[in-house]
Length: 289
Image 1 (spheres, helix red, strand yellow):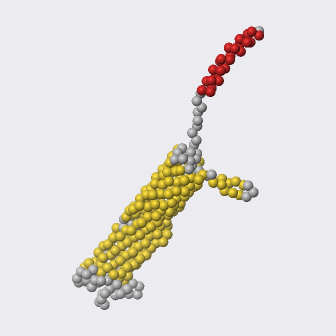
Image 2 (cartoon, helix red, strand yellow):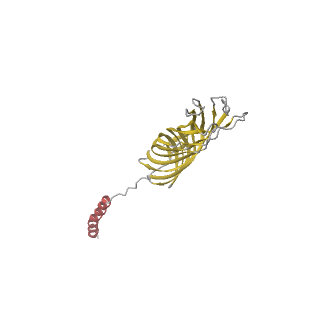
Image 3 (tube, rainbow, N blue to C red):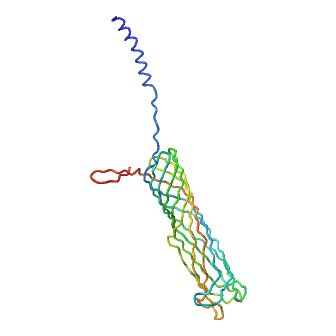
């Protein structure tokens, strides 16, 4: 019996060693970490904008208290489209729910939009004859927005749609300058009016794609469309002779614009700090990380 036991142990030892060696040699499967999009972030953007708008100067009408007939065959239409570069900053927070992402974001973009157009105004008093050149100018230097984001996450990639409120300030200038074409009596006359829409509110919608380069660095490409309302102002018409229908300051022209739209395409880089966590240690604290 003892001999059989010794023989069994001796025979089993090589088998056990082989099994242990096989276990040690077997590759260990490593599960790649799933990207975590939840957290606060801040970053910068660079891109291009295209602005679309037109302006009109409507028929001159008598100023309040005067009964003189209007001067001019109007409206005169002005194209105010323009394009250029923009850049700015953004910040926001994301919540990831498995493959669904919800977020909020705010941004400020700086740009230089200077659009202008000059058209000829026809005088109906002694004509019709060309009477004025009418210069129309529009200027913007910033765009801002506060938006919600909703996206679909696939590990390091995220596709999203976004929309919310937008703001800008647009400054307008109109200048009417009298021509020297005979028998025009308005030669040498020039009058200017300026008006602006300060921090006017509009809307913004768009979409983008974002890539998580590391757990802290994000890269994006984004398209946004901004829409703002119409604007209006008044331009006084000045005459240079006492026999004109509209004497000095007695007539005004109505100035108006179409809706102002911006289309932007931009790329950006963001740094993600991590998710907000509440911890109570004698007092309430907000932790980021």
